Every structure is written in structure tokens, then in C-alpha cells.
Image (cartoon, rainbow, N blue to C red; front, side, top):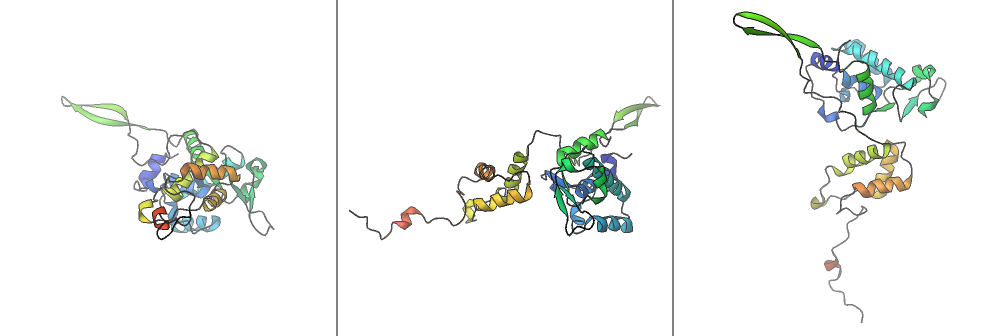
Length: 252
């Protein structure tokens, strides 16, 4: 089985660093990233069109992507990989259905939407590690000394393209907090007359993107922690108090 380093080398070691801030990945995104693809090239495709696209184009590592999608899907259905957001498309149903993972079994594998179901980045890291994707091979290198040749095993250096960080402690609320920073505050510039987002907008975004966080008070706490000190609660910026007082005579 190919390692993550070998898969990326096959693809020319692409720069995928713009994906490092994502805490949740769909199953398809996880498989594509592991095999050295940028999922943005395929984000317009649903499950079966994505598979057909890979089969018809047959880019390098395409077989690995298809097998990984199937393997990760099986791992979600057997609860080997934890998922906070499982989406099923059941037969004869009008639309797809969001289901708690605890109710999902291997019998649901064929109905699981791989372009919508999400897994935590740390869960993917653990699963790949347990299945040998980070195994470091030993390769002999040649050393010349006094006209004689010796063979010495040395570990291959890790690729400078690191798809997944070492797992760190996290919770759904922490994931939402980092997501809010990335979405609303990373590029916020209060000195450029940039209107800050309102609290209800931030809360609604959290509930949509982090289904485990639905309580209003938790959303508000996350907003208060992340909010820029000059942003207050968002919306229209009040006029300077000194300007408000011009031409106003205080009552005696």
C-alpha cells in the first residue's frame, strides 16, 4: 500500500497548504487530499459524477481516491471514524437526510453521501496512521570511502507537504470558535471602515456549519470571545459622541 508521502510524490508534491485551517472535511475531500488532489477542482461534483470524472480522466492516483472513499465510508458506518454530520440519501425519499451516527450501521453504507458527510481532521489522521499511511520506509544510500562502497540504511525525510497536523485536544465548541475566527475576524480591519458582522449573523453561521452547536447562549459566548474589541455587537457604527453634541444645548 502506498504511503501519504508516496501518493503526494506521485502527484508532484502539490501545495495544499490552503486546506490546513479546515477542521472538518467531507469524505471525498479527505480522500482527495490524502491522494494529492486539490478538492476545489471537484467541488462542483456530487458522489457519482465525481467517481465518473475520476474513471474517465484517470489522473495519477485515481484508483487510490476511489478506494479511500469506499474505505472511509465503511469506517464511518462501522463507527471506526467518528462523524458529527452524516448524510444519507435513502431510496424512494424526496431528499437526503441528516442522521445521528449512532443510528447508522454498515447496512447504510451504499446510501451515505460522501460529498456531504463530514469527519474531523483528527479522526482522519488517526485512521490513516492506524492503516499505515504514515509508515516511513527504509532506503539504502551509497557512501564512498577509500574506494570501497558501503550501504547504510537511513530514514527518508518527511515530505515538506504535511496534509494533517498532529492531533490536538478539541471539542465541537472549540472547532466552532476557530471557524468563526477564520470566517469573520481573520481579515477584519476596523480602521478601514469595515462593518463588523452582527451577533445574530455569527450565531446563525455557527448553527449552520456546526450542527452540534445549536444553543443560543453558546453561540453568543463564542461570538463574544472571538469578537474584535472595536467591533462591539456589529451593525451600524455610532457617530462620535463629540459630533453628537455639536449644536446641542444641555438642559438646565
